[in-house]
Amino acid sequence: MSAAFAARREANKQGRFHSIMTGFKQIFPHEGLAAKVEQAVHLVTPILTEGSLLANLHVIRCMESGQSPPINHTFFNHCYNAVSHSTGKAAQQFVPAKHPSLAESYDLYTQCLPALHTKPEKPTFIKDILNAAAQRADDNFVNHVATNFIPRTMRWIRLQLGQIPYFQQLRQKQVTSWVRLLCRAATEDSNVSQLLPRFTSLANPPADVMENIEYVVATMQMLLGPLPVTDVSLRKHPTSYLSWLHLVLTDFQAAQGTPYAPKLFSMLPQTGHHTSFIKISTTALHKLVKAAGEDVPSLSKKDCKEVTSRPDYWWSRFTNCISLSRWTAPTSDRLRFHTFHDEVQTDGVSVSVLMFQPHPAQSPSAHTQQSSTRSRKRKRQQQTSEEWVRGLSDRNIGQPQRIVGLDPGRKSLFTAAIHSQSAADSLQQ
Image (cartoon, rainbow, N blue to C red; front, side):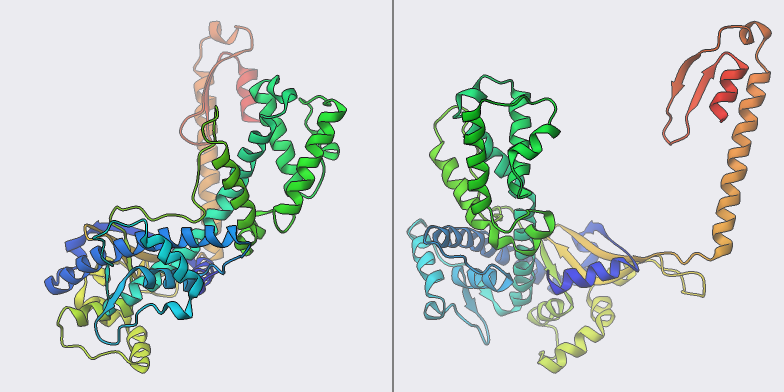
């Protein structure tokens, strides 16, 4: 879990985050800064695209050789450095001697590129933007494994069951139930015999079929990774499950060309060729302003702390983010409606501004007032229903006790058309 993600989760206890989408020129009125932000978007996009391709190739190579590469934001940073050419003051190039395995993957990657291909440029003023992109790539990798592990495992089980004649004769719905049963037995570190009684729609298969699927489950449990497989384990140890996903991908590749061949997938999430959104923090904003030609001091480690300690100054001076956030003056019982959280994401056309909204402070008197308001509303609704029933003619009241229509409405409250007093009373109980 990244430090930024942990900090945001802690802040969620005090309020909630939300984004406001607006136009690019409304946030960046400064022409020089706006031009640099647009340039940064066009520079970062090809680096992210090629870096994700290299990372996926490197992971596959490591899996084929029986290795487990460490995948974190540093790994993605190395991939971005390998596919780009650093320029500017204090530029640092990718050193193959320090990362020999990744260098071999890059050599294989370059063999698939066009002859006239040139490395994307990576000026030093986009370093912080790429660092944020590497952290986002690491978070996306964790989500990628946690989201796709079970569906792809189930698709692999379906592929194996399709090779057994017994399951070829079953209906599609029954096969799906068997797939869920085997997946649950494997991921929960159980067996088919224990879970089969819970699936009442499934009959006991022949002994040889049962022995076959028990063997499949036992084999999966040896290869899956840490058991039991849960969302927590997938997010805590995502690299531990890569070897199983690579085995699934290998079997999917072997099944291509057969009827109902499963769809292939990438080991890591891929960045498309479309324009990417870049994240701009306070330090990244300072470097963009510096690159735009503004007379601002260069950042040392000490100055960087000073910049981040006064973020409102930089955002209000060169952007309209602060003015976009609306708030009321904080008093004893009123908090800010929402405040700017020193972060924007943009693709050069639109801007997503991160806002933070504190939870409202409710006093006991406010809770009592809300309860009394609900009570008055409920009582008014009951009185309205009783008056409507009393307004019915005797002919309608004398009809059999039955409800002739229900309208669920847009909220939890529903209304009914009734033809008897007892039915009206039963609805109010």
